[in-house]
Image (cartoon, rainbow, N blue to C red; front, side):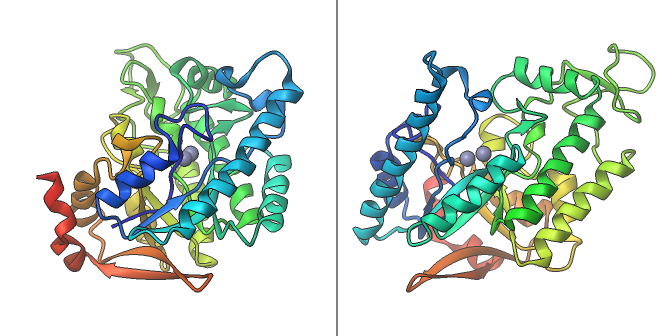
Length: 329
Ligand SMILES: [Zn+2]
Ligand SMILES: [Zn+2]
């Protein structure tokens, strides 16, 4: 089994358990591959989370940089142990603005002997965090004119900048904007504008279709997915969506099926673990999602061949036959 995306409490404030324990769990569960992809340091104080601020922005940003350096050192040490679960070291890139994208490129270049790939991710729209809490997500929605369709458009436009500039090998949680699409927020199914519950065309943000009536959103999503496929990038099926009680992992059904229609699209699997209990979380549900909803023929994964990353694949039939699944019974 494989996970291409993980974190730990040692190196990110919102982590749950230490790196050693997370890796030990992956070994215990007999993962073939477990990628360590800590968040890159953010370089602008406006992107610091409340839990990271002490009052001195300069110091807080330096803490992020120091912590990331320590992560690279520790991850290298863990990798060198030659555990049964193979380790590949990468980084989760912040696509929040052009400065961060430029910094990510430099960071990868400066550490290319350690970091072999990146997970390209968006955690902010118009500078506002969308996966921190409901209040911040609501603020991002408000900034986009209280219009969900606009928020998603803004997200996908910035994601595209990240895709063309970085060409991330793995595109992380494609539709993270869904994380706080609450059943208590109602939008007009056609315009995306926030409306009162019960008004004409009102649908909850949790159940609205992003592509049925929103042609612009559909076109942007398709463009982004097509671009990733064009350079051989991989789309991540990320089970943290299920862990956060969404009905589907990222990407959700409509985006996953859209991606599948694009020639060259290849999916990989990730748990985006921040702690021991997140390792392989909801992989049983992800298996039926891949098999029955997306109807994949093959799942892809990375393999480190003497320092060169290769993209391999396994048929769904072989994947389903793996003894890995016994621990979910
Ligand atoms: Zn992320
Ligand atoms: Zn992550």
